[in-house]
Image (cartoon, rainbow, N blue to C red; front, side, top):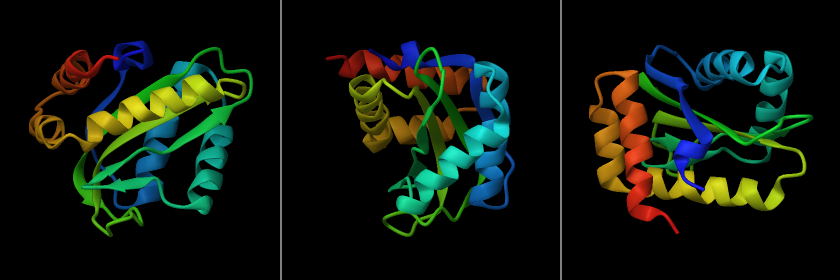
Length: 154
């Protein structure tokens, strides 16, 4: 399973304007709601519940908010590059400017973990992070995220 299985061009947001973690999540949730056909309020509630357990800011300016959604038919990802980094209560206290939102069906435990590992691998790679930050369009972000996975496919 590569990122091309999780991410489609409609799920990529370039230069997202947000002043805080909640605004960034809200913008991603609105887009996710349109893609997966689930209410944005339900998606946001699940993500905020997950954030209560501990920030999904994984360090180096990246975050992977995630949650399981009732009656979702497949794992779906969204990628955002923020115009300005926002505080995300990340593990390293660094503000976040790359967010990969991951939504999974309730029963997709193994696939969900595999997808999280793939996204984590992408966002831990300094070259991939630099390329994503240097992208100048949503199309470029998508191409970088999907292309990078070809190097790491298991």
